[in-house]
Image 1 (cartoon, rainbow, N blue to C red):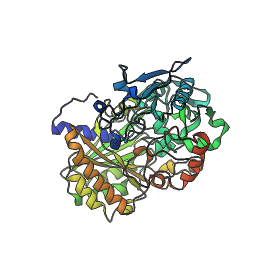
Image 2 (image 1 turned 45 degrees about the horizontal axis):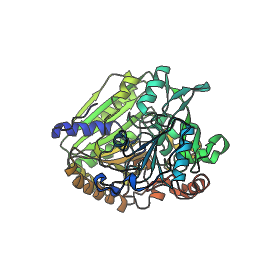
Image 3 (image 1 turned 90 degrees about the horizontal axis):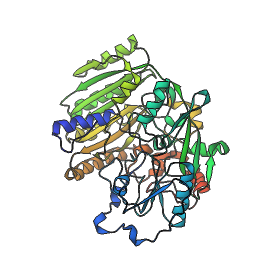
Image 4 (image 1 turned 45 degrees about the vertical axis):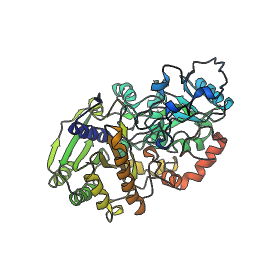
Length: 490
């Protein structure tokens, strides 16, 4: 989907809905808005730091500020973020990554890692450091026993283009330009997760390059695999190969759409409560999202197994409270997923986790105030998605560092704008809404929906697992070479 530089307000609200319905979640990469550098000021001028020349014997390509590719490569999916690394290392293999890490150590440069560039706070880029760009490492290889080896720079649209013709699926997200590396390391969820678990639950093996430039396989260290299953990107090393267990892909997916317009905060709360009750009764083959975009509510329900009378009754009961209800015919899975790929070009946004919930009771006492700010502020979106099902599998919980399996729902606060002058207003409203949640005890947050607003991010993202993750960090990157503003500290 191409986005025009200028759009009408009506077009922009449609764009916001598409982005949110496209599960604009998945995440790994881009920039700290509090550390914006003005390139004209020369504060991040590479000429002011003498860098050792690389005697490269690999295919790694080092890009500096005076190279033509630099300006496009330093940017991520979020147009509000600007960072200026000294060097960008374009890597095509594990050996390239080894050399890039060694180069960073020889020049005393901090390292950020970029696969797809979707990090909500730009953690896959940095100022005055080295960025390891993995976009060239996007191969998909089919192994025995339905295992699939994937390069971390492979984005979801590329992955599905390779796997779906072979009738295989990995339970990942739907935003087409998100990189599989960052998505997996933070957990990863989507339309198939209630049936098959998180994306990280399908991760069987990984290869990483640590902070000293040493190559490791999780075959030799189960604790490293535990950490990589939900411990976040840019922490322990650079993942260069990921091996997944795949599942038989369904032939079709059916979508159901419900809509309500011109909502007040009170009616939005009533519909949210009804949706929670509806969603808790869905079969594991279903996903649902509650997407409140200003005063317009869109509810999406997808199902990749045969439609049943029980599901139809659930939908019809919910529809009695809505303004519109429409079911689309079951469609080929590849065709249906492309409808949720979202924007293919960068946009201005400020998104973040708005908490995990067990049920509506977690937010019932205070949600009206938050909804009031959403319905009265064009450009703000509040979205709640279903978890539960096999995500809560106890075996998955023991084998991974992802700490939020007790929750049945995940939420995201989103803000989009066309021009930079809208940024401050929408950021202020977003901060006010997040404060409502935090002051009312909503503390657990999703690392792939990171935010610099979260002060106790260690506990918010990792819960009781943070100390154990620190031990892994101490073994693989004791000098904190690979880091970002919210990376795990040894």
